[in-house]
Length: 202
Image 1 (tube, rainbow, N blue to C red):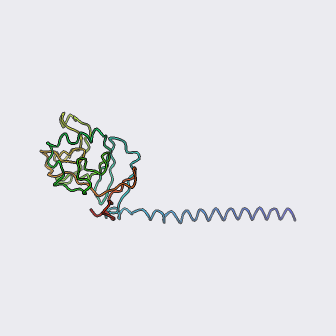
Image 2 (spheres, helix red, strand yellow; image 1 turned 90 degrees about the vertical axis):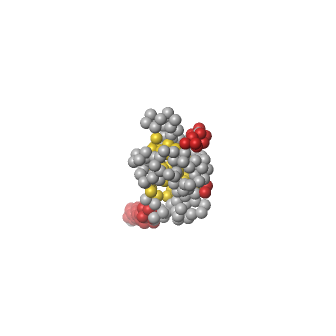
Image 3 (cartoon, rainbow, N blue to C red; image 1 turned 90 degrees about the horizontal axis):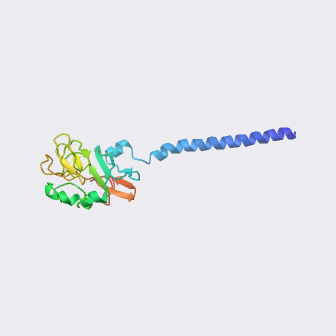
């Protein structure tokens, strides 16, 4: 009898543990799609929902490319010495003060950014919409010894500096556009949302 009670007790413990485990697994499976639903869908992002970018591993000279509102967005980190040299070639630019170009009010400055070290640009040439390629190395052989680093459009040769400002002699007439964006913290960038936009409306 005692032996049978021990078996029943063991069976009851086993069933209790098994039920608890099954219930926990069920909760995880049920919660996963629910939690995932908090993130914007691809369609929502294409329509302008803000996207979050982790900057923690973005080192100096590195660039990330994201898509927001069906547009490629370049995000890159600039060294302090790079930012300090931006004014040196103002005389060679079409719109050095960004007076005729499209950007949020907080990006109407020499670095065209909220923070000197992080640049955020819409990566479509303002001439005919091609994708400018990075040419970050100063003095690039193909671009000349006075090249400060920046972007070259492969379609028609428009050149832009590391603030997205267009050089004289380029077919593009204005600087690269800048989307609305903000920083949630030092390492989290939100594209499509700033102090005045909540749903990515520029």
